[in-house]
Length: 583
Image (tube, rainbow, N blue to C red):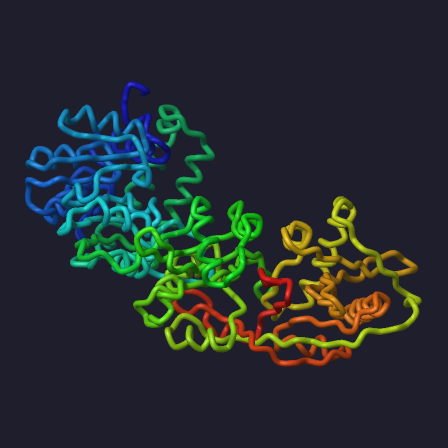
């Protein structure tokens, strides 16, 4: 079967194409087809429904002659039809087999074997950019920004694709764009939507067709394609989940048409590692002190962070960053993002409206990275009361908690009779890793009602041992008689103040741990011990002889995304100094 060009397509397109080939003796398209309400998907086959889909695209194109850029060319059938109708077509695909097949269909086709993100062309070259089930593979800000540059002043984007329509708490992370945010981001990038057509009911039967074909032709697919049983089983499971989501209204299939209108005042982008020097420059201009390369990497490097920026030309005028944090979300493992380095250049700070750079970066960030069906569930941060009031007025945040500062006097007492204390050392990894993980395993079940950052060895190592600027101390308290670890306190000595950054300890052992920290601070000649904790958990510390004092720091919750409701999270965060990126 290797003489059949479509068998060399990337998986799973080779499966789809070969199913159609086996069933009807030829294959011209790889995309969904449209099955009418009175038709059976298996009986009507693939060719006619796919031709209907292509016809709809052709009917929505600007008249020939004009220059079309097709992103994702499939088997080249659509491109060939466009050329026959008088269009000039440039097309691309990262799949070399697709390019080879398409070029054999038309000598007039200019085809590139590359991803759209890598494609280079002169600005304002194309009249229309066409995407047939390829937009889902491209980050939307990158798609719209590049499309805006490549299109002529009156240019058009036309696409048909699958989208996420409903998002629910139990959804697994998915790759489909969420339709409302996709449209919103297009408009922020200089486009206006001129057509939207829901084709879900007509397109969804294609999934039924493929599942039936795979089941019927399983033996031939395995024998004639370079695929394994495991790959095919995974594909079937994937298609079954898609069928369920279409039937439940979670997924949809839409035609969208956008017109390029005008260059937006700010260009919104996802920040890359290559732009860190620009981020550091904005940081210095806003905060008047340096964000070192080492500090930037500690926060954002190696996939730990992400950010949205607003640009005016080559100048970054706003930045909204976040750092990934694994959390225990009411006892379940989830990923959160700590909002960091929110900054706007002084010349843009006066525009605190929903059209300003601050709002646009602050809204686009959670829409891009967080919420249900995303790897990141929700965010948190540490803004001042004034900052959160501004964000609330703009519809970015809700206030879901306050930070209080706990104060303790030091203790000038003899060593405890039942417990001992020792400093953990960064080089004693094998022994301390087990201790830290065990203590976190004992602490986490004590707070089933909390949203609390995971405090395992991976976190401790990066947050405290690998910090580029500060030197924290980890104090282990253990039983004098049994040697059992009871708790760990992370401290930072700041003159006469002992800052309690973090604790890894069960509720019952917290008083023992705090007493030892206060005693050690007294031995070192320090004056007091202080800590941050969210107000809702202050009673846990006041029961240990501490006193709570208000601060100006609030805990925000994003509201301009599809995620947990404000009332669900209000009063449930456990956050300390160690959960910040600036202490």
